[in-house]
Length: 99
Image (cartoon, rainbow, N blue to C red; front, side):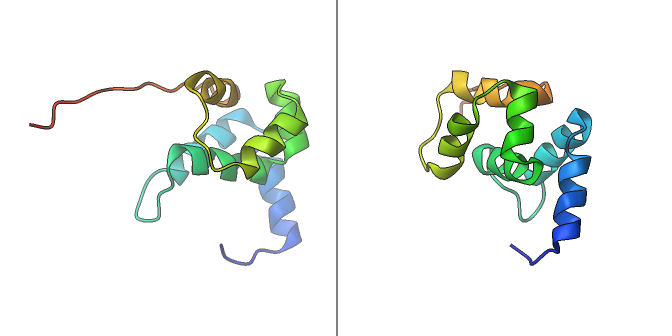
């Protein structure tokens, strides 16, 4: 990840306090050439927002957020939906016929 100044990090965190901005940041992280998967994009968004700030808007305890950010496991669908709720998003699994 490129080096950023503390002032930019503070600015970005402040901008992401707006739920619509945070939603766009999350969704745009999953697009393009350097796209992230959903879990990594969610972790990036929460990290940029700040754990304390995300905890306040999501109602999820800070320790649970910290644990999720540090784990490599794939969270349950219900857990992902809890983390996506502040962005007015939810997970949908779709099976497609590839034959």
